[in-house]
Image 1: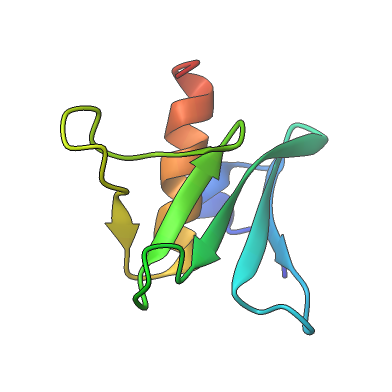
Image 2 (image 1 turned 45 degrees about the vertical axis):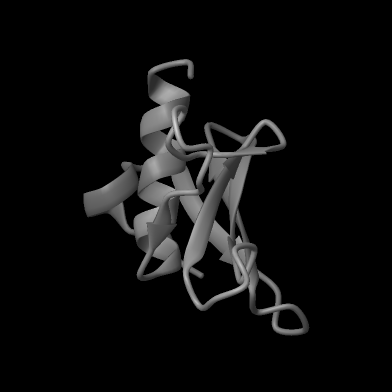
Length: 84
């Protein structure tokens, strides 16, 4: 998949596999910084994963759900930039 320069800039990309369409990798600055996975919550939402942990609400411990892998990748990108 080609990177969306409006979302990530020139050094970021969202990549996936045809055999496993529910998992996509977020590549940033030459290495994997996270992923987005559909169905981790048991539904159709996409969950952003960074450093092996889902990104969500620290109070309720619920995953933040996204409508598309691109929205989830944007969350991974923001978490990476903020060193969360």
